[in-house]
Length: 158
View 1: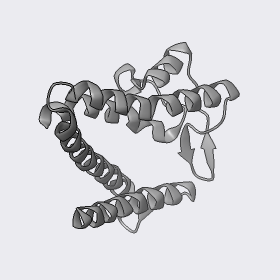
View 2: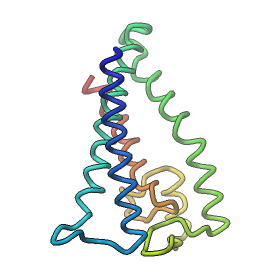
View 3: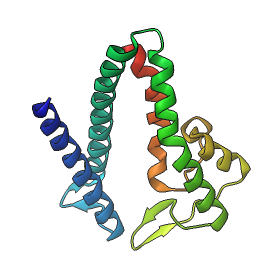
View 4: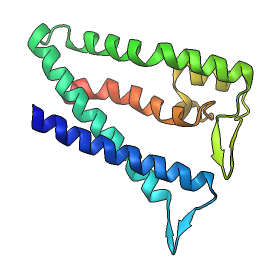
């Protein structure tokens, strides 16, 4: 297990660094380094995060299966995931939306507000922006709908 943890730490570290440098470059107005776009760097970082999350969750499913068996595996897994993601997400969406904090997307030198109505607000609360094609009030929130949908798929894959 220790070797797995070191590998997972390495994977997560690389994902963090790729995404962090991507956002720093965007903030400072750099969209290309020589002839190369920086966009693939950010995309690779996000993909590495999804791979990391999938691996960690598969290990979690394995531990839960040993404790609970197959009978309550899906429901126990989903309850844990929902209570891990939704409470903070709901608070963040509400605070950002009602205070109109400019955290929706990144432009050179500043963060910008994402204008949206009630449909966008409720899509953000439910984490279904990718389905309703609405923006995210908080830039990094764009990936949480995909993560929540991944949670539905992983137990079946397990």
